[in-house]
Amino acid sequence: MSSTVSMFERNRSFAKSFSDADLPLVPRMRTVVLSCVDARVDPAHVLGLALGDAVVMRNNGGRVTKEVIDELATLAFMVGMMDGDRPGPFELVIMQHTQCGAERFADPAFQHAVEQQLGIDVSVSAITDHEQSIRDDIERLRGAPGVPGHVVVSGLIYDVKTGRIVEVVPPSALG
Image 1: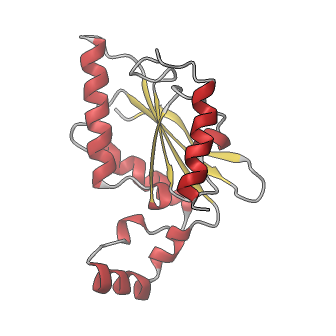
Image 2: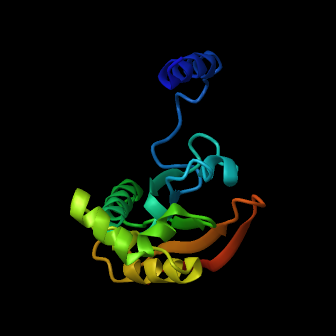
């Protein structure tokens, strides 16, 4: 059986008891979680998020790329427009994880092969030290045009063996 068929069956079960039609556009926690695409690292499960709690963005390594910066700037702008002249709290949680496939992106031979075969530069997603990667990503955000200084950012590392998260960077406003 195709996994799509299985997902449709699961959705029918989900829809039978669906009661969240009136969720607001702005998530309850006013939070965006940036995490890795790895199937072992689903932020809803790891952080106990319910539908409507947070926006979840995922990419290779849970890294702050140009695309992530553009999305964050757009979301912050939209929330700011909805808040009027007094922007409310807006948080970003960057969550990387142990045993991440993006660690392979640090290998120059792998980077070269991806560049040659696909024309994609994976160096921005490369991870050699998760704590430093998170700190670098936060600094990239500080200098990003369009991301307001009132955005509160924190950094976590999820351990895929224990299921626990460790705070690397406590919540702090970018500005």
